[in-house]
Length: 446
Image (cartoon, rainbow, N blue to C red; front, top):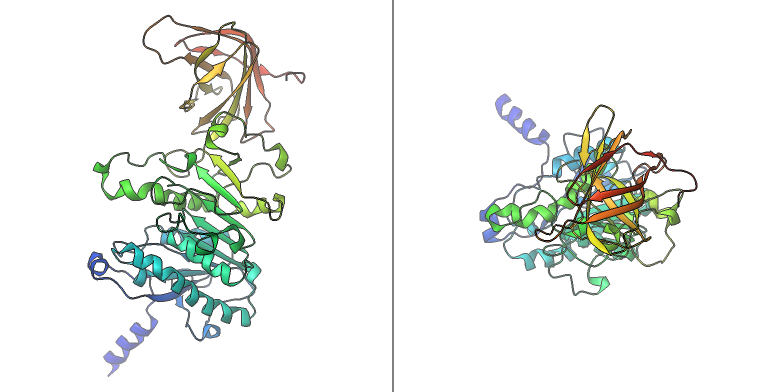
């Protein structure tokens, strides 16, 4: 009897876990079942399953604190999301919250994507039942925050609709495109679904949603072909999911606090790359919005009921994904028009060097016309000792050209208070690197 009691006690004390299924379940299909797993700083490693019709029985739920729901998407293989552990860990370390993992793996695990899409409305209805009880127990819609991944983003939107947009915030991490792209606002995530809706679009040419869906919509690297992701089918499953999942890992990066991913409100990625939208002067004193968990700090600067703001930025190919951007402002005095690329290298006093990523589009240099070029670096150099510039037309035949520079100005975008650096009256010979010591720009420099 003692042994039997011991095993019963162990079973009762076992931590509820996210449903772990397999490809067999996906092939046979799964019937929708939703469980809510609660984590707090008091139980960070062992979840508490919230009872559907008796939410108030929870031991750890504190309705005076923010309640954050994390909602996954389509699960064609049935396994728990690879990012789930880090999401839990870093959300709890960032803020003292109630973290609710919405597990609808039974219902999302199927090879029939349409079935999972149809279950989204049902999941939203179930979530509303839980939330209604939380509200009775003292919770506030203002302090509710939903983070939805792919299909989960639309589920969050459906929940927000049910409360007429009074939820505090929804974050959509690459909201699903298939089956939603042609749908009207009420059939998908929409800017009116919460008081603040921020969306990261990382796979707009395949699994994600291209058009703006939020109060502010972020498009890393233009929204597709993320750095470090496979480019061919030979990479297998990663080819299909890497771009789509990058939105999640970018969000996680914002929770780790290693660096801020700064973004730039702009009409298009091309305008951003041309350096047309990198000052954020209109948004002072808050400056440019940052990506991820702290994006809502920027909402105070937005005009109520205004159209969606699109923000663009580039990233590196691995965590923490931050780029350090500089604006290269050049005025040339060639009589003939020149088209080409300029590569920038920065060196510090110890000889450490970083090299810029070259823009995919050539710049056009005309006499006495200013050209702005965005130069991104994977690492930051705080005190620049030398600047190296290389001009190239990328043509293999024909004469080598010169680019006559009247003025060059280099400005840090990540740290705009840093001194701007200048150089005047010099010539770049094509494909020949020129290295020089910059000087502080004069106050009269345009």
